[in-house]
Image (cartoon, rainbow, N blue to C red; front, top):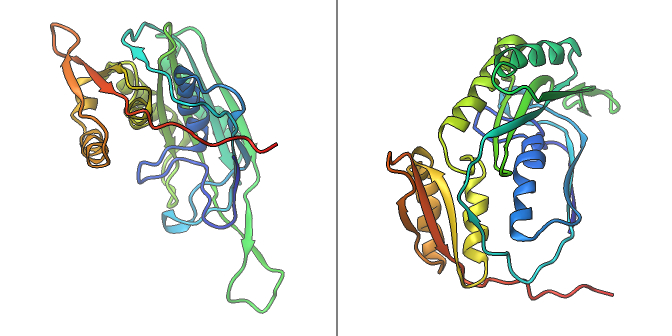
Length: 277
């Protein structure tokens, strides 16, 4: 599968509604597929960046999704050891604004994280604002800039390969300095890690859906108490049950009751497709 998302409405940054950025999907979600045996020819390519446009909508980014690895069934997983955080990686991006915004976000975020994790590196990506045709004008060639702003995506990796992410972007109305955004994103990452478990809230739906689709065996996933009790996760369990998936078994993973182990029996929802010669 090779899909190109382009045109008006494609936003690559995080949004105020809680949507994660394309960078977080690329660095914190797609690597999780390796646990299920899906490793080859799977990536997200950000060809043109765009923050949210005016009123929190719009944008004119360009993203390519490549998903070419076919497997019969996702592997059964037993992800029970969170490990200890060993490194933090991130991407600071700005679109149509000064590159100094990235440096300011990176400096502030590292000021919070360096004392906790020595191996911290945040990449800087600067791009021009995308252009859209200008409506309601006599000049047919008139264009306007959209998707102007900046943002930061952070991912922490543990010694056992668990990933925890945080994502923030400047609001369309402005009013947020790069220093504030960098600091907030760093604290958001620390809060995500503090919730416990082996996956963050952003990745739980992906993991549980693939576990429900896997081979007819019991897979186990350790999640934090607050993540398991999140409304989004509870709704996902009800929806999967309505579509024929098995119910979840839940038990405490620690004596303190901070983490729980979710057991899921796969239904063997396989890929019967064949490659075309």
